Image 1 (spheres, rainbow, N blue to C red):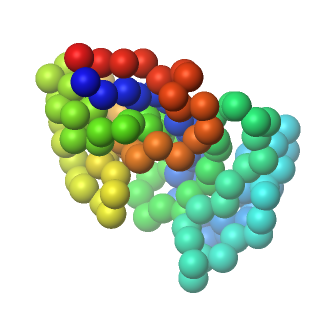
Image 2 (cartoon, rainbow, N blue to C red):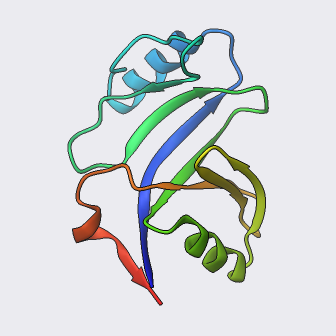
Length: 126
């Protein structure tokens, strides 16, 4: 038995100016960037969303721009197996998360639990 839930959205931007991308999305979504980009430390800028809402990050990428979602799970391998059984395809293992592709072509990630309230809000799977 394991649990999972939607964790956040990542806005993948094929850009040289991550700060400008984060500023655009921050203004568009009413969630300003929490910090300035530091590409030497991280390809992500986190937007300031309200407590309890999914996180939103703007990420600098080398592939085409797109939006993907993260699913957080207390047992990543069990969640990946569940999703593969539903038709997803495992694409890559990266550090402590797994990239999958839905049967409809969208990429998404299964990540460790990172948001508060997981115990109260996650779905339990057999």
